[in-house]
Length: 248
Ligand code: FPP
Image (tube, rainbow, N blue to C red; front, side, top):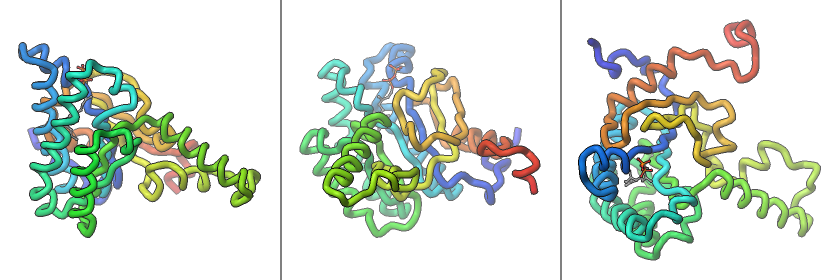
């Protein structure tokens, strides 16, 4: 069968794709190894997804790497994930540089351990002039955290009379989110057969197409990304309007 890569319309590639990388633990269980091993194998999938996104000209790729709720996991797993982030960021920077990838992060980065933050800052700084794919890592992130954060800033601006509460609208609100300046994702992919959003980009996915696949994250490769994009390209996006309004 023809590959999904060949079937996709290069003129209709989504600008922003977001991924909930789920199933590392189940993958490990199926392979008789530790959860940490599952996460380690997940790094290869991240590599492939980033490569694939760059190849087809996706502009922004947001990966849900660590949620606000993930802090509740056993300390050994949290520590191992933090080391994995440091290692992966360090090991991949040269390749990201070569591929013209820019890096950014959303979430409560201040809550990350100092070594993760330092590494991340260094890598972001080294890649900041790149003009290709923008790889966005969601770390210590949740959609509700981001919304509350925005509300706090807006309330403070209103309290000191910098902002008239009557003027608060979608545009003002989104400027206060950590995703400000990034277009909303047209496509959100979740692996591992779970049909949930799990506190990911809540505000930003109002009209996003959702794509759920049974594969566990460590088995995900760029061809799976291409398959999701082909599926997305066959959908009709109406944004609440009628078919006639969209086609005319
Ligand atoms: C979800 O699987 C996965 C995570 C919480 C961690 C994601 C991290 C990586 C893929 C590592 C590398 C990432 C970067 C950006 C370098 P799960 O543990 O919830 O799986 P389960 O539901 O099967 O238990």
